[in-house]
Image 1 (cartoon, one colour):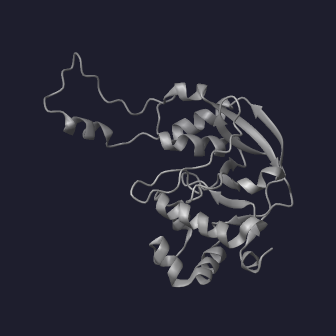
Image 2 (cartoon, rainbow, N blue to C red; image 1 turned 45 degrees about the horizontal axis):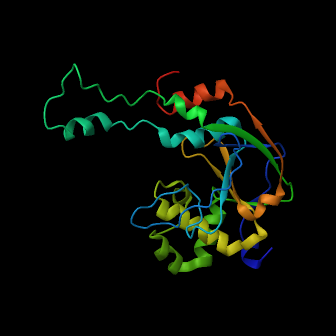
Amino acid sequence: MSSAAAGLHTVPPPRLPVFHVGRNPDPFYWRTPEPLNLDDPAGARFDDPNGEWATLYCATSPYGALLEKLSPLRPIPELPARYDSELEEEPDPEFDLPATITTFPADVLDTIAMGSVTIDAECRFIDVDDPRNHHYLEQLGGRQLLELLGVGRIDRGSFISPDRRLTRRVAGELYETVGTTVHGLRYTSVIDEKAECWAIWEHAKGALSGHDTEPIPSPDLVVVIGLLGFDPL
């Protein structure tokens, strides 16, 4: 492990398989992201800001994997008011249907599949919830890093921020710091901190085994849909 990586607190992966929700029929697709566009930031939370390597997002439980995959579909509370404000005339009750935002788009389930995979026990992941890593990253990069990220300090909020200009660049800085000596990031879901998640970097692909695909568990799906604010299926 490099001297820089040695200063970071890392943890081993779970002994049991982790879960990933991806495209049907093969959920284990390593998508290389588009480079970060600072004017229109997009992409998954810890995607490479330069768009050169892929990240596979997993969770310790099927519940966590579903929560992370479906959370971008959450209802937007202000959508009906926004829709009404754009209308130049009063809505016609016979032809203008109300803007329903709490019905889960069930057709999404036809496009996704649940996969499970085992991570080699020798792999190590940076725990981004650990305050020791926040302090070390600040010390390692100094003021220049904080200015690059546009923050006054690095803490857990830097990793759970909805701003991809921040989260992707923090992930990129960590990747550049540790190289291939570390295999990804351990984090917890923004929505439910009890849901443990793993961002696995592409160079760790060979450390994954036992790839399997299984049905999406209905009990977990029902809980996640309710937690995200949708009407019951």
